[in-house]
Image (cartoon, rainbow, N blue to C red):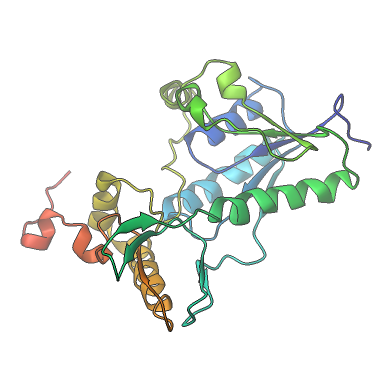
Length: 261
């Protein structure tokens, strides 16, 4: 098939968070047209709850005519150049200058390399030959997040925002899912994302398990990897520029017991 601006390939960027899951479910139940594909760009570092939700609901989407595909980056490393001064960090880690004591933040490269690029490779594998706006990329951004809307930055892909066009907020998405008896997924994010807020980190530490363990391991790993000759910075996933176990304090750290829910 020849895809053009008048007849574009329609791809839903399925991150399995509330908004993109709502779009996929709306398509499955006939509230919006079904895209050609719903594609999950798997960073391989998502929270366990996200993977569990995807495993449960992918068959349901397929049964309702939504073709779900999963793609990955060629490399999902957090940091390369281990032990060298010229290392490269993928995530927007918080930095601490060992000479001046100043704090900063590294440039975020993970979204481009782990999500955007794999989605584009998938699109090109389908369309074969590009032409202006021959791909519609449906983005799961709601009205309350309108400031996150962006052009694709490439000629052959047009980003579209169905939830914004329909004036739907995140709270509307939650209510819609509940109304249709569908699960509310957890926030889609990497376990060690430096953009987690204080409450998110606390909940993760209280829950423990593999998600917290991975976040701690990555936090430790990026600091060790950055100790090459001539290195001026230490790297952290927490803005306090402290090791994650120290930066995130919960009552249990002081001997308190978790309350029964």
